Image 1 (cartoon, rainbow, N blue to C red):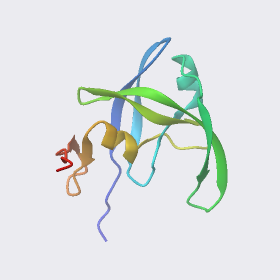
Image 2 (cartoon, one colour):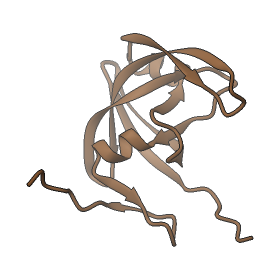
Image 3 (cartoon, helix red, strand yellow):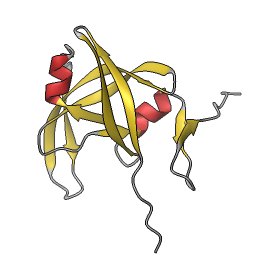
Length: 120
């Protein structure tokens, strides 16, 4: 079996108190993006709502969520972001990839612009 490895990216995130550059693991199995609560607090992001998530162990956990301006490969858009606790992993989820118009190359694991689909 081939080792698929992990794709890690550096993104810029923006809040009311400034900008930070952070590393995230790309995880297409995660709907939302997860970032450390401490980092989100530092740049002035405030939670908007709470959601329940199911973990890979089938447990249910509650986490707070807010839109965060994420910039990668020159594209910057608000993306739903979970306030990750210390036991959580920081990831760039599939929703952020779609919002930013990106996809993961299945062979190289590199992030690249995706072709947009028209509704007609």
